[in-house]
Length: 74
Image (cartoon, rainbow, N blue to C red; front, top):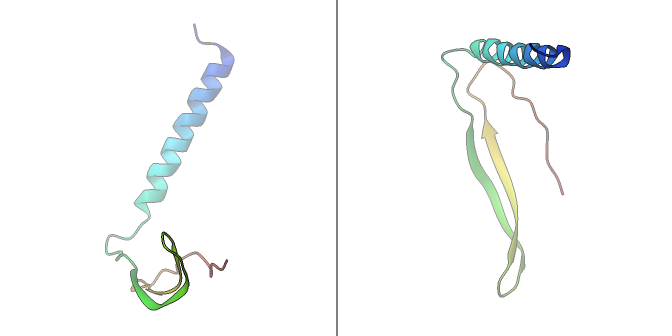
């Protein structure tokens, strides 16, 4: 016989699996991957075993759907 909390866990896992399947089915079939290229690469610091660069990326979205995200700076 199953314990009550085991039944709750089973339903929670089943619900999560259904949500994943449903959310993946909403992606358009003609969805294209974003194109990523290096726009600028500048040497910031150089040592014998380590080099640090500033990298600027250009990301182009060929789809009608907006991409989520924002600028990343350190």
